[in-house]
Length: 273
Image 1 (cartoon, rainbow, N blue to C red):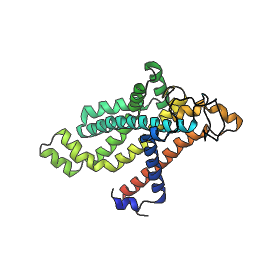
Image 2: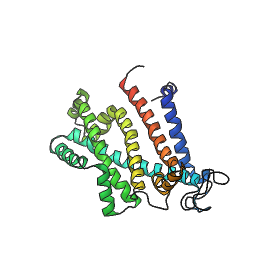
Image 3: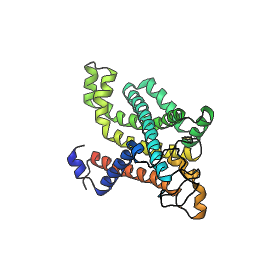
Image 4: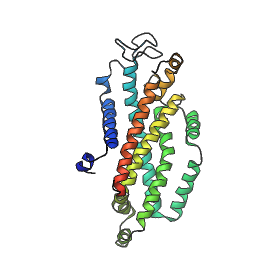
């Protein structure tokens, strides 16, 4: 993708790019942007909007603006690390299954089928209940679950590429498995895999937020967008929209990534407006 491609992007893609850049900026510079510390108690609980606290305080008297900034940093960072781990494992095994074939392909595919058959959220809740709710466990559990989805796509894309003449020519030249995967298969499967990375990040981001809302994700006092909805949910009874702010932050990033993914897939398909 070139600079010219980005300049000719539709308004929805531009909107997504700007929002994603803003989230990345907030995540990188949260310590400089946030008015208060991540766990700093600055006032009474549920103080109204205005004054020193533009969006009020939460159930423990922490500044909501600061918690939103720190929550964005934590949620984004953990979701990105989880997605990279899931994508690396899933795509690598998917390419391996397609190129190798035979019993390796059958073994990996049947294992993935068994894992996919279990509802993802229930499976995550079960594993986190057994092994604990630390960040490391959360990342590993979500990565394992999401890697199965990446495996299916990577294998399907690679199966279409592996039958091409240039791949057969590379085999006849005596190229090894690593060469075939890295130099022949992967470059010709880049576009759908990039789009899948964006979509998979959305699913991971939403899954972590959902688990945090249920109390099995990122644990207090670490700020997280999902747990912020739960902590301030009581305000909804009084017509206060504060609990909706972290939910809106989750939705905005998800929609923005989908806008960019749709644009990338449209360009990769070769379709014209």
